[in-house]
Length: 555
Image (cartoon, rainbow, N blue to C red):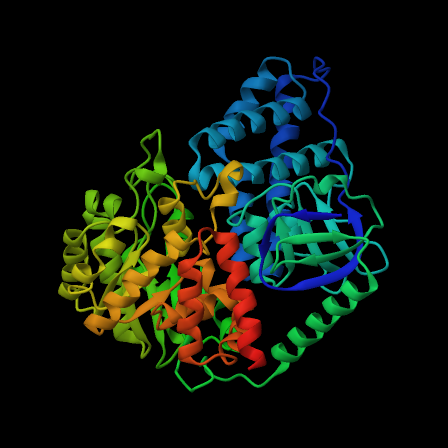
């Protein structure tokens, strides 16, 4: 039997399944036999204990995982939750029940907000379970620890568990919930774990079932044949060989340079990205710095120190920094926390920054200061640009602050269709394929019910990328890819054929993409791109290119 989902990375794994234990049962709704003050004290003590545990896990994990776990630690002691728990214990609830109800209420509020906070709502369930476990004196639910390596099957995986997985034991992850931007997916990419998320009916797979988990195909094959296992093991060996090969710059078979860059969310991950062969940074996300800042934006000095850490890790190399990408889908009290019915189409990205221009000016000041203190090649870009006028505004403002190279992210179809005009004003463009796919196909990238539409192989998305690539070639403007599409080794070749001059991805994907590019020359890449454009849907585009690529390699 074969199960399908969204593959994370391009790896493959062979092994036997182990199911994640069921969550703790819902606490009984019986009146407390203690006083309200005692119950509240118990609850806050356990919340504090869980927060400290998550902080320790963050120190061990490092990188993006540390950011995620630190955010969870903050959730564990959120004042709004403490207020809700206080009200519940005052009404006679036990600490366990008060925690359960309060976290559930808070979770529902975040789910209703959608966007970034909607995706983070699932993390509250894990924190709630950990607090209730501490109150009950039982171990918190977590990853099982069998003696032999295994494929972990779960409804979803908490960040605290994903961040500290024993990679010598966990061969792959298969989850029934989650999407390509869930924390499970984000951390799986960072740790190079073979994973498939949003796998329908995954929880029907029994413990001890032999499976092949193929992230490239997005499939889980149960009880595979000996031939299928042999083929999978050959692919595993090939990937290991590629990962251990000497690091070389990204290039096509004819020597055409295609710099391979890293997507980073913090300075902590810079060193490991360099070790994995990153030739620079194609996307440095600055929102984590702002999301962790509390009620006010970080100061210019705080920002400068943060940016210096990243730039110092890449002397002489390109580091592309995206200015704050937040707004209605990631509300910040100092930017925009107004409720919006459809935050993905609301006041976000550059729109929110223009409405609060001092925040943008402070960030550009900090970036210019960091640039002056280091010798990296700093590029800056604005998110959610949808008009030529916005392009002129941001590039002009960045130049005003002395930043030499300023560009735009292409995530909205309108700016892709006007790419020839926009790139006449920008120093470069970087295509965010996740949002471009979302807006092209009208499918919320965080909504599981339409996850099937969130596929950058769709010819409509590729046609827009082709428009941008052609505009870049006509104007002599670099065009990079910084969305997850760049991490797909075969699609990466197609993107280069469409005009992409650089590719940026999770560092764990660099080896696979480097190996894929060197198998094709520019003519072959352009042939594959035309085949993809001629398809009618994502599945047929992927299938046709896969077949054509196999034929080209036999020639």
